Amino acid sequence: MDSNQHTRVAVTVVADTAKQMKARMEEAARTGADLAELRLDYLRDLTEHDVRDLVAGRPCPVIVTVRAAWEGGRFGGKEADRLHLLKTAAQAGAEHIDLEYVTWRDNRDSCKHLLQACRKDGRPTRLILSQHDFKRTPGNLDAMLAEMAASDADVIKLATQARHINDSLRMLEALRCTNKPAIGLCMGASGVMTRVLAGKAGAYLTYCCLEAGEEAAPGQVPAGDMLGMYRFRQITDTTAVLGVVGCPVAHSMSPALHNAAYEELGIDAVYLPFEVAEGEGSFNRFLGAILAAGWLNVRGLSVTIPHKIAALKQADEVEPLTAKIGAANTLVLHEDGRIEAYNTDYAAAMQALCEGAGLRPEDLAGKNVAVLGAGGVSRAVVAGLTDAGCRVTLCNRTLARAQELAEEFGCQVEEWENRGRLRPDILVNCTSLGMWPNQYETPMPREALQPETIVFDTVYNPPETRLLLHAAAKKCRLVDGVAMFVHQGALQMQHWFGRSGAHGRMRQIVLDRMRRHQ
Ligand code: NAP
Image (spheres, rainbow, N blue to C red):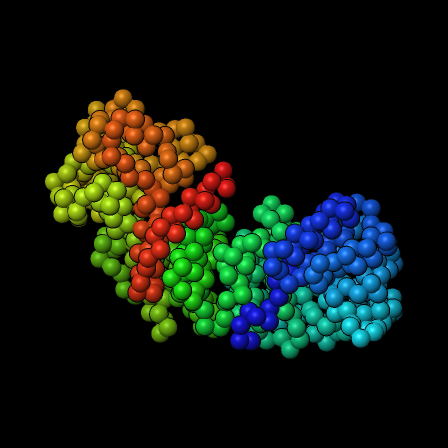
């Protein structure tokens, strides 16, 4: 398939009453989706009249589903009643009805009337035969889809639980090989790629939820994000795929940041969250699988906790300062299989610092800098600062970690309890103190802050941390973590596409998302 223009977007609508469902169905149509899937099994009292009424009043084409409790749904009534409700939907003109494949396979006689109702008249109802596995993704997806394709279905649907992200890759691969219109998706955080990249695999449709928190299946993406942030309809065979690899990554701001920049700069690319379970073997399996799936066109990865060291080990070429830091947050994947590794955190921190404080990079030489924290971000920041010629003093709750880092990069160390006595030109917070939901914490006593000190807080959620608020009151010069976050994203784009920009849009998107999610 050439592009997503053939892969429909369906919004799953759930509600307690028929009246609410009608209203939600209208909202679903307003998102710009092609279809609304009416999960009638969610209705508290479901009558034949409701079915007719809902189908007659549909503002867009629909899929009618009355999912049985034994298949993960909520309908606990008799099978004969369920089939009758589906038949009513078909007779009322629903564009699709969804029936469990097992029901069709084991009770063909009782499904006959349903099939007849679907095939009647000029505008037939398409029969979706579906199968779900809420525990795992079986090893024989091709065989399962082939068996289902041999049925009376117009469309086949397979939904399984992803235990590892490679299950999602297998699902997409299996979809590409079906000879019947097919839907294949993996549930769970590691399954997001099967939903967003459904068009690349030639799927019949992808399912979304109406809003975050209304997922009828785990991992469903809100329709607004699918059509807006991911620009689902613009994804084609040639669209480059990028993403953030980590665990967990469901709440990462990076997809919003990158996709907004691609849209503004006209870059044909989409950026996803890739939830890859912990462990070096797990990361390596994922990397191997995406390199083998050339058709997906994965061109680059952002790497976050816990895979930064594994990522570095897999690279063929490592930028020298990245090697010294010992962790990569950016991989460039070349078509010939070559992998380059970078760490954009240190350069982003230096850019944010210079820009925010009105300094040139050469002005940093000789400055006294106090760095609070000795974790991953401190490592990158200390590498950048010492490279720029700063005199760095490290201060960390766990003294031994500070000493280790200081030895490696030639810094001084001060005990955590004494941090209030430091009088640096620049203070950098690289601890997680002050980060949401502990936004009332601060790593530095207010009274220790001196006017004119440059205070840089790498924490970006919230953007105005307690430390920065105190520093503003003391007339310090401020640099926030959002600036660093935006710069590291822009630097990644530079590595992947040879260009970047849209800093203002990226900053705005991050601020908007944080405001909405708090
Ligand atoms: P990390 O490796 O887990 O390090 C956390 C650091 O915070 C350690 O030094 C730890 O001290 C210290 N810490 C944690 N809780 C503390 C407490 N209650 N009191 C004192 N110190 C405490 O994390 P990381 O990857 O370096 O990330 C640190 C922060 O950087 C994150 O929270 C995030 O907000 C920020 N960040 C910003 C960006 C950006 O682009 N702006 C990017 C990534 C991260 P111990 O060694 O004693 O445990």
